[in-house]
Image (tube, rainbow, N blue to C red):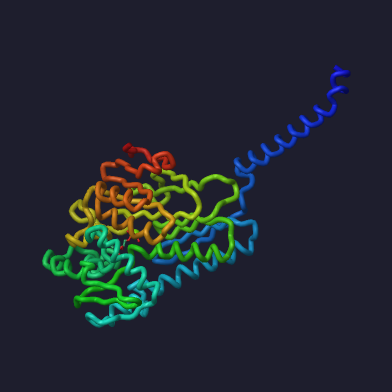
Length: 357
Ligand code: ADP
Ligand code: MG
């Protein structure tokens, strides 16, 4: 044995060194995989868009984390004050109050581009989605605390006003063809906000973040452990913290959920919620109770969660597949349908639901 070692001294040294390097590399890999390489993080509560905002920033620099969280909330409030029609003096409130019929009503270039994209989605969904849903939102008053079932004749009168063919965008101006029309960007506001926050986080240079704005969640960058983010999708019949299931996703994704549980009232056992079918004038009533859309484009994610909720399971799923976004649909009989691409990365957790393949 001794003779063998002396004779092969050099080979044994080489093998030992290679073994040590391999072991070292494996330990680094394992440490990262187990999450020991996780960046430090802080969670900052806040509010904007009439809902709660939770910002968790991952970065080893505390100053960067604090600074980014401040800028995120400032951005959200700034956008809310520009595009919420309920905020007096906001760009949207002024447009709705002062527009000249058939004239060029100037708005900021980004607002014009959002309205333009909404008109596109309205066309692609055969009018299931409408940027000018305001007359219906106001008639039903569901988010204004004076909720009631409007008289059928009022609903009938509102239908031509919520048809987006009466609306155009020319350069940076909005052209409105019918008196009584009004714009409500409620269906896309949080998605636009997620896009703006993403740009802000890029500028701040933080490593990772999760920003949830009501039902819209931005997942940004990475948390340092080379693992996907696990994001809970809300149980539409559970409480605020109850999870339907968990989705594994990459950084730079926006996850928006629209459902019949956010804003509603009940009368004679019927639930009247805040997402309307612009073609009937009534809350969408097609057997869906929530729709989640997952895509890097925040605007698209938010717009499509509302649009698909109105379209129903069959047309909504087909539209999601066509647009190349991931989606989770939940029906009132508690069946869960997903687009094919996420049937492995979405894990159903809530009891009583069934995942349909
Ligand atoms: P939330 O923003 O409440 O989480 P959504 O993204 O689904 O949920 O947006 C719902 C809002 O969109 C409503 O409050 C209303 O302002 C507006 N809205 C309702 N129905 C439609 C529709 N068919 N098309 C476009 N916007 C709609
Ligand atoms: Mg939406």
